[in-house]
Length: 394
View 1 (cartoon, rainbow, N blue to C red):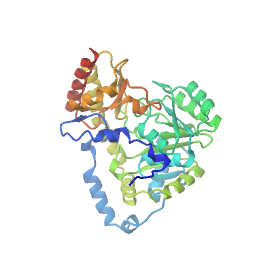
View 2 (tube, one colour):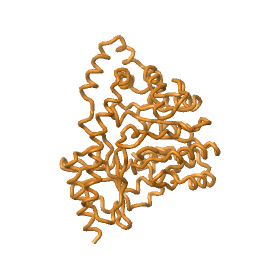
View 3 (cartoon, rainbow, N blue to C red):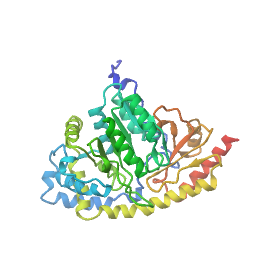
């Protein structure tokens, strides 16, 4: 039969990275395309032991029952204290919601604030799945210029005046896809400018715990004086993505509306997953898993950056992030989208840059992930890419 899909879905395409995964069935494929944590860091034994203890405790029946949409109260209490490391103060459980992965916060914010045709400002380039979600709600992503220190504040204000957006979305620490980090001055500026014009800000922070060097930078939320900033972070890149546990912090009125939106989506985040994460805090394990992960990711990042310096053509330039999971690079002329299939045939995958830009026009860049491959495979893969790109540039 012919299906009459909703207006919001009938012209929607798939998430670019998820579509790429279909091409990666070859066991010998070296993939720099995803954002997966290193498989050797997944805490299988720890999670198994914690789960066993929980299921043999007096909490078992509560954990296996329906729970509050707002989240598991012991974990909300932990988060209310935990966010002080990001400079966020004055937080109680009423400001905290537990969600099913960081993307759910993006979805709920769009559900609660974005009407058909509304503009949502994003950094150019930005996390492609966020724009996918915005378009699902028929919002219109518009890019704001950015550089080494983050958003161009002049362009931000000009775009606010021109488009009257509902929201600004940004990933200010070890940004996906660039790996860059906003300066304190830019963070303060974002808080001041968006407050001036009454624009909501969604600050997405999945990566800041994975810091290789330098000092922690206060969040944009820490400079929020009027309640227009919502901060969201996930445990996917630190404990496990399969648990699907994240949280968001914001003004009580905003959190109450997000709760209503979540009730219509999944009722509540898995209580078992929430209880497992809470046990990580109760046992003092969270900082230990981060400390265990950082040397691994630091080695992988250095392996990729060093291989790029050794093998890539001189026309290629890239970031050298101080944390996170990605290196962003590009050329003046080479079309990385057109080159993608040829790279896959040679056994290496990446994500071409146009998917990360609001207008989808930039085809000169690519995102490289280093967390899912060994240093040896990283060097092999970068050399393959470098030789291929040199051929194309002749």
